[in-house]
Image (tube, rainbow, N blue to C red; front, side):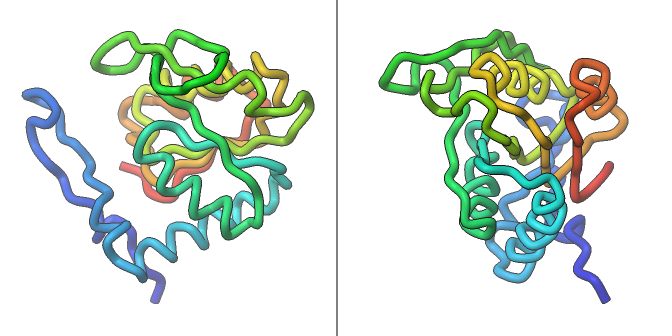
Length: 176
């Protein structure tokens, strides 16, 4: 029987604000079985996309992106919130459910034409996902996929990504 990752996701009501049910993926990472299953599943999908670089989105996306990059024997780079990277950066506006932020990457993080796979922990409204794809494309990277552990399908984020970037394959391991 296949391991159900939903068994390792904990609902935290009213976090980070009243009315929001936060999906805590920490138990996935704490369990060797669940964490390895999540990386194995992401890797099986990712291999079909033939990426050359994995990009992780701050901060929980880093955990999965790093393990996936290691599994695929690829390098990894990061998308961070504004002001966190030390060298010259490309920046995009990154509105989300809670605020308008900015995402940044070092200008040399992605080579022109490089096949890039972006990884995050969760796709909610899709705005952060779209912004991250925009950012990689601004560096002339070829985004071949966007992978996540969780999709909150009722927020229609995957649909928003597909409207903005229909050429990008979107994949989530668990749907709510």
